[in-house]
Amino acid sequence: VRSQYAINGSNITFPKRAVFISGRSGSGKSTLLRRTMNQCRDRGWFVVYCKFDKQADALMTVFKAIDTSLVCLATNFTSYSPLVNIIHRTLMSSIDMEGIRELCAILPNL
Image (cartoon, rainbow, N blue to C red):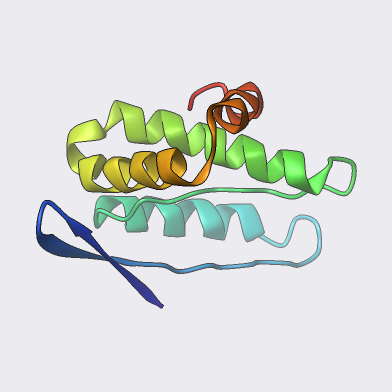
C-alpha cells in the first residue's frame, strides 16, 4: 500500500507496511523482530514498534508506540521533515485546539 502526498508542489510517496508476529514464549519472535527492524532502519525506513501485552490496555500501547515514534521523528527531523510536515498539517486541519490539547495529554511528545 502506498500513500501519496503533495508537499511544496512535489509528490512524495510513503509506502506503508504492517507486520504481526505471534508464537509461543521463547520461540525467537523478539529477536527476529529486532533484527528485521534494524535492517529496515538501515535502509531508511521509519519503523513504529508496538508490543501488545495481555495485561496492558491495547489503545494505550498504541499511544505509547506513537509517542515514542514522535521522539524519533523529532530526533531525525532532517530525514523525516516531509513526514513531520504531513502529520502537522493533517492534525491542524482535522482537530480543533481543544482536541489538540487532549491529544498532547495522551502523546506528550507531540
